[in-house]
View (cartoon, helix red, strand yellow):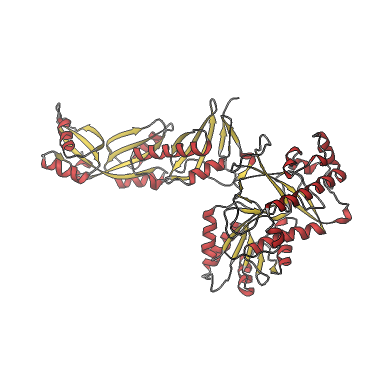
Length: 143
Length: 433
């Protein structure tokens, strides 16, 4: 149930994000979800794309520093308290969330939350036991 | 450690006796240049000092420096302290522009410099039965000829191969059983690569034991690589034409620095901006006075080479002081918030940190702010921001410790800074002063 996330190291330079995204556009890569973690002088662009390996290759060929890491993507009901419930399960299981970001699915009924924790296997176990919907990579890539 | 000495009497002198010898020679050389070299007489008078003012070797600090520019006053013969009939050899040192520096030797000077080389070679373990292949350039450059005379004085068989023609170099090594080589580190690396490509094995097809590498700076990594590839021990040697060429500084088997022959040179390390002596262990410009040169003595010559003095006694038993490997050129120094900083200091901190790639850049701007841009190693990036922040903080702290100035550290993508090739532009100064 793990899905591939592509991280790109971005120095704080005008146009650098645009350059990264246009490399992906030329390669025909579709971005499903995206977030940027940043400090004052550098950032990390994190993305779920339809073909992480091809995206990585294209970015590295043009000089970018990249890394593929595993994350999980879960479906959270689009109502108050939806995400809090999920986090409660993780907290009770003593799992630390390193970061998360969310996007709303086209149907609008549920939000997709991308999660990176200190223990992905355990996260998957706990959340499946609790009946939380976990997306596989194919589903995410085809959203 | 095997201990061999060419001239044990001088090499093992006690520190006190060495100081006494230096004082005697220093007085004599100051008198000679004052009497015989008009340019020095003028410089001393301008500084309001006479040779008789010198009471201890330390008093040399009151005498004026000799710079490269001084070598071109009364050029070419003006600095001679001997009449031309006593001068037997000219060497030159190519400047990048204009006239070359002209350095002259008397018969005695050639022998004296040869002895320094012979001492250095014996120090490395070489013996009369060794075969030295001398692959430096023969000619106006001091590198090959001065080494040649020194090795002959020791009694080694010298093959005056000169540089280049790598096929022939390797043939010579095989045919005559070369045990020692003298060349530049970059050429040694090249020769080693060709030897490997030919499928020749050190110990079976070639029998090298020692490589004397100098005339270019090279890292410990390069040294290790050459040692592995050729099956030799590499000895770092330091010299400059103005001081007679190679043999000025030479590593002993204990390493940890290069011995400078203090009976031949008076050694100082100064702050290149102020001209004052630096504190022990501090980086500064090496300043040398020739104590044993007849034709063209030089007083407090500014070498422009940066180093530190290594004062601890050496296990090899020699009392002569050691200097650290040359860190770079004093021209590269800059000042931030009143602190003297050399790019090489920053480089050595960065190279010791995991996660840092090859290149870096120093940017000075605003009100004396220093920013160090550092490339992140591709392999180090694992997608976590904490790891990068930790790397940035580690670099900042380590630089603060080494420099006494806290820089702003910026992590940049690998491959985005100018590549380091010798004189890469490392420092960009945008300060408005």
